Length: 630
Image (tube, rainbow, N blue to C red; front, side, top):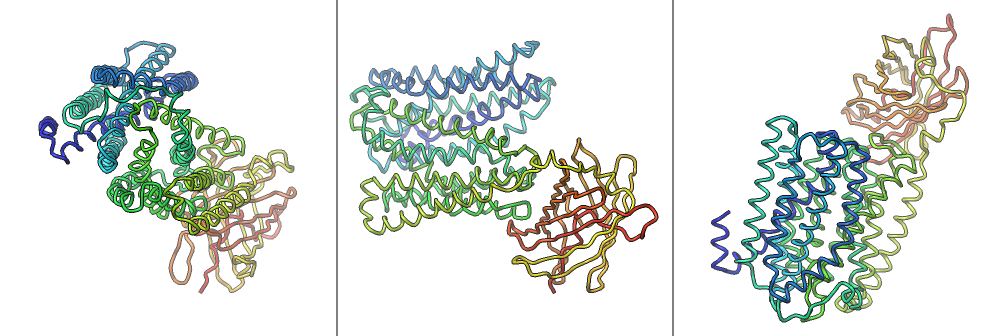
């Protein structure tokens, strides 16, 4: 690292850009821990009450959101007086100490003491980080010439992405150790020292080797109100905020989507790594496109690419996790334009000979407001019946909030950018494209409303008769079913018998199937109670575990079944809804999906047998194997 700083002092063009970009690594590296990892660390590792942590986070982030315009105004005055370096060093020292305080809190503070300590350290860290980040962006906006500003932004964001990857890998590993053990404390110290070293190197490189801040003392000072009253800049904030909303919603919901729609938590790190690596690799190409097409047209092109990637995402499920991997690569590539073009484009709307920090302070406020607004998606999901850890139909809202609505915000931002002079030069062709994408936005909203109207299990909580799963399937039952392809044509029908018994607290269901063509199949389910009205199930041809929940007279069962089709076996996603009609009758309807697309339906009727009746028994509605399509 010292060698890199020494090389920067000679100031060849590429080395000077490296010097400017190096501060991006520690600033991005610290953002993930203080915004995302710290709450989990204090609640799970240190035992602070979650409610107190939530209150502390709300207060700290509220301060963080509203302070940025005033920080920008303060930095403008310091820059005009050529007093910026000491402010940056002060902010760096405060940030390093606050970061250390977060991960190395004093012992024996108690619940309230820990929460108060976290709140104080977060406020110091947020404030110091804002000082460095706003000054950093303002510096980049005042480099000599647009081409140099774009190249510097590419270096800044590339090294920033490296910081994100470092924080999400090494940081997570280091901080997973027991905080009360010596090994855990040593890991935390190592992480803190690594960050402090990178921060010092980055700031030394910026102040001694980066391209010069043009007009630092000559530019007139300003304030955030002046920035707001600048018409061109105020108009630019509209697409900026819409685009920020489109980015904030997926950032807030991605972990829930991977867990509850894709059931692919094991691939989380791979998805995120692919997303950020694609963004880093795309930075040079977006710089080239911005030079050839102009910043506005290159940015608009990235928006269309992001919409194309996200458009299919609301329909994805566990069987199509690999498709989501491709979506991460496409949308990550589009993210590169947001990183390298948007700050420079925003800076181009700042009047000449005006200090830039106040303007970036105002834009930073809107960016953080977008992130805070995206958090409203969580209570909205709770209102419509979604609960973390549960998938199924009630999680459809999750898919649309994660991907569908961001597409709408992207298209609205695309629409707003038509006012740009470079966009207007596209003439009639641009107008036609705008009409087509407006229609697409309306279609997305309509599809979202239709898709999210699916029933929720809680809707049946008061329905009679109340279904007791173990009681209904105890003993012998009969079932009759038919399989239909998409469109309604009946492919096969079958008779099934079931014998149910309890083995301790486990429910065993032995199923025997006879199809109309004489084929026979069997399956033995073992259901284990996990919570009131919730069971998990396993069987030889079921991938992983099945999730079964009951409410009122209804059962919702979801699982992945290995299905023989044309001489091979494929994984089919099964979504069963069962309803008890009376003491002896149950009806089931199953949706069969592959890659998120419905391929067919299964309808089954059950009849519970009295003791001594015909020994032919029924089936639970989990389906026989879906029909072969030879």
